[in-house]
Structures are given as structure tokens and as C-alpha cells.
Image (cartoon, rainbow, N blue to C red; front, side, top):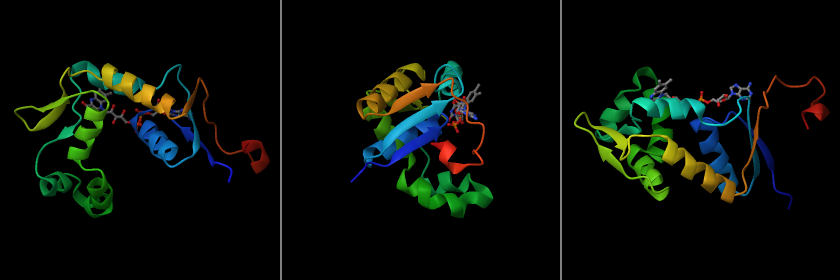
Length: 145
Ligand SMILES: Cc1cc2nc3c(=O)[nH]c(=O)nc-3n(C[C@H](O)[C@H](O)[C@H](O)COP(=O)(O)OP(=O)(O)OC[C@H]3O[C@@H](n4cnc5c(N)ncnc54)[C@H](O)[C@@H]3O)c2cc1C
């Protein structure tokens, strides 16, 4: 059977996570990003010390989402903060819990994590098309190619 071809628009953390999940499930994935490289805001986030997640009990963590709690709970329960720490560990990035309960990469930076993440995605066959801005759907679906 032909592999599904998927275009992910935006190479920030959300797009990269989606690309990884799709590639794991056998899709042929291309990540398109308008900028010359992906993950730029993520790198910026790392400048002041990248706060990855929080180590508080899950019920308290879910409570942070206020009115959206019930909508988001199944998604967060499927990939809770501890799973995020294990994911980072799998990329060779150790994490620690700060005095506030916030979780940081050992080096506090985003760059090593992003490098390892992109290497894993490339190894899984994900392709990147930077300087490609999505402008909306074509009126003729055939042109969306
Ligand atoms: C100074 C700063 C510090 C931060 N610190 C933290 C922190 O410590 N911890 C934390 O969790 N978060 C932090 N954040 C927030 C974090 O960076 C964002 O939540 C995260 O980057 C959002 O990811 P995203 O994938 O949703 O969007 P983005 O990272 O914004 O990625 C979207 C991508 O889509 C691309 N794009 C947009 N429109 C198009 C288009 N039409 N066609 C093609 N490509 C397009 C953009 O170029 C971009 O690469 C911080 C942010 C800033 C600015």
C-alpha cells in the first residue's frame, strides 16, 4: 500500500512532534516552514533557560488549564510531563527539577535538544522544506499537490 504523504506546516515544537508521530506511523512527511530554519522560537525560548514542563502531581498540572482542563486532559494524560522528560532523555538530554518544581534540561538550553530532535526526525525520513510559506488552500484542489 502507498504510504500516506503528509505536509506539516510549521517547524516549531508542535509541528516537529506531529512530524515525528506521523513518521513513526509510516507516513512520508515533509515539514514546511516559512523561515530559513525550523525551531527558531524554541531556540529563543532556550536563551533564558528552557522550562520544559512541571513536576507537580498530574491533577494539579491539569488544573492549570482552567476551563480547557477537560478538553486537554486526555491529550495530556496520553503524554504527561514524565513522558516528556523520558522523551528528552531518549534524545540524550537529561532534565532536572528546579526549586519551583519546573523542569529544565540539565544544560538549560534548547539547542542540544533541537539538534538531537532534528537528527532523529531526519533518520526517520522526515524532510524539511524551509523558506516555504503556506499561503492558504488553492481553489483547485489539484494544485494543492
Ligand atoms: C522569549 C521566549 C521564551 C519562552 N520560554 C519558554 C519556555 O521556557 N518553555 C516553554 O515551554 N515555552 C517557552 N516559550 C514559548 C515557546 O517557544 C512556544 O510555546 C513554542 O515555540 C510554540 O510552538 P509552536 O510549534 O506551537 O509554534 P512556533 O514555535 O511559533 O512555530 C511555528 C512555526 O510555524 C512557522 N510558520 C508560521 N506560519 C507559517 C506559514 N504560513 N507557512 C509556513 N510556516 C509557517 C513559523 O516560522 C514557525 O517556525 C517561550 C517563548 C519566547 C518567545
